[in-house]
Image (cartoon, rainbow, N blue to C red):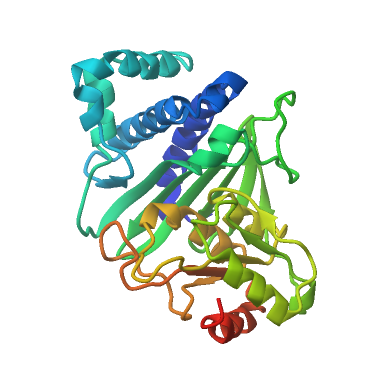
Length: 334
């Protein structure tokens, strides 16, 4: 284990572990009535609670570090949102954290850094909100970047079982916690036992026809029409593995899929850094490769967006050139 970021790794793992508990409690309380009403309040409560909790831990341990997160507390400070803020306080108290409304808003706003920084954290408190509401996959993603390089990454996947697949509501498993430190490999551990991590690696598939593609459930997040053309062009026979969130990165990192496609759905769109930073280092340390659709490395030095990149292609490594070629060949047909 790299000693230079050992404290950062420990703090990040503990913060994400607690956030997983909060989010899981909120998700398991979602009723069919809530889903029928298309009520998004549960995921919003979990989103704010997760960001508040993680930013609190980072602020305590590394008070000088900027945090570029997805949420801010502006809407929570209005009088009409007082009951909503009280729900967040209740959820945090469920894991033993007492806080005032002012403290909650302050912690959330710690994640509102903007611009470029030599050293900073980036956080997605709940990646995959629709998966969260469906009771399916979502992730809590936290990464530390120094000098434009991701150095520490932690990915909490409450509904991804340690041995693969979906965690059901009647299981006692608290999901899987993935982490990586640059140069020290990629690991998965049960949130119930942080002392027994297991190293993970991509699957060494050399024949692209034997690969499995992983992509978003939501067609608005990736061009599924082009990914279908690419799979046909590559001779891939297996049906795509579709799931929400950066859990897709974890699936590639531990060999459940060999290709993850996040293809541009409209010209000029640029990905947010918090949607990828945690997963990128995990895959790279597991032996895989991550670029944009043009084969360029992802550039995290331009604020909260990947401004110099288009889309994202993730593979186990050996298949990368073939996948990039298939993208170029099918780009004009999709």
